[in-house]
Image 1: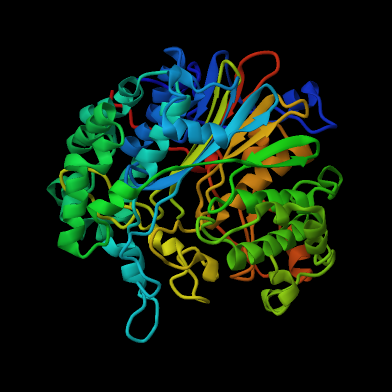
Image 2: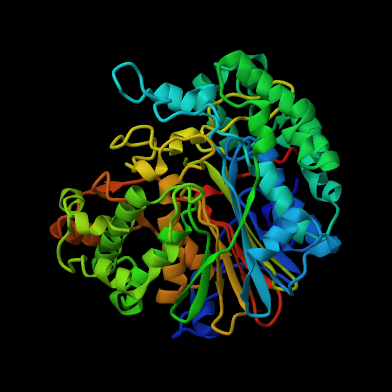
Length: 599
């Protein structure tokens, strides 16, 4: 039987917290004195929430691949080993920084690679670029898609029907990044995922329990029922999840690239299902889909360059929050004290107010992202924070001056031996998406159409009440909270890659990891493991994790906050490049997926 320790001997993170530290006041001795410590790897690091998928990325690093190869291999493998969280039927965002400037394998002549080069952001001795592979509304989508005859949002249709599925982008986005910036041949990068699908993934106790929890949804679809409930009962711990149809789909992608998914047998299976079941996606929608290279947004936080992606990613809101709280002396007010959490929650509410009302797909709603980050704009927002009293959502929503300009997801962070960094977040939205598996292709479909504003003033499944800028329209990409993030040292050298699943709580999860690391001086492991809060204006409350003290909660109530205890927030898989050589990695203990190992 393989023990958990065996995984720690590989350049891959699969369990337990760990650490490094840097705030301007901290030093190596302080880092060593903290309770938790990171896994170290001499030749790079892959941080992912499932060990078989993380090992797929580690294989790429050992074979001479770079961080892009490893991140792409890991994400494809996660689509096999954690099908409830991500998959070929979803979408997401990728952010990379690599030393040097030239795309790998002499592919700079390809049009999409030339376009990516035009979006690169020079930083230090390398450059960064993002890939937006968010799902797209089909051509047949319309603004009232999910409204019933009374004008009420039909939640079943918005989340559990084929109409809830937007055109998937995961395959196009991962292949674009690997084609333009990877080193290894695509079949080699996809080989681990294909092998996992073909040979089967051992079922963990957690996965078996998630199948039981989702049984009503999954059993409603005959293909999902056959895949996950052989004999009418959910797969049990120690059994293997065999996915031969998914293996065949992955093989078509390995041999044909985008055409292996967006055309041919896979596309025919998907569009045939849509035509049969009243879905919207057509062959023309699949042919038209393109992943978008995007230039990252950049700010300086406590002297550190921080990169995130523009809308529809959640990166703009993250950077806005970092700028809002930057003057606060977190080190002196104390981690998770009321003096720290009150202004933090108030800043969250202000940032979500602007996000929910002003942001959407910049493809047809021009967004001057830099305006949200300018000094004057940040100072005006910061001035709205009352240091001693909570400002209610009713009060904030009544102030027009401020209106001027799922939680199942996976995140992978990778560092390679040259210091290259990749952060990639992908999702199918809800656990198991809409519960529908494509017959003959073997992957679950997303229900990301629910991330649009189905009706102005009506909350989506995450409680977000969003504006017209995020309304449903053909070809648009819904607003997302996914926030892959890279942090650099003041000299421009690579330092941290992080991100998280968690629906609307992704942005605040990443925010607190960075504040704990840079502002408080916790090492990376402690920064990831520390209790978190979340506030998003509506519902008007602070959600808090176990570990926030009763005294702190009482002080927050006295300042006017409503409080609600929440389940664990996010799973911030993170890596860190070490100056002396090698990398650290942390797997967030909130979503430790035990792998059942047969004797």
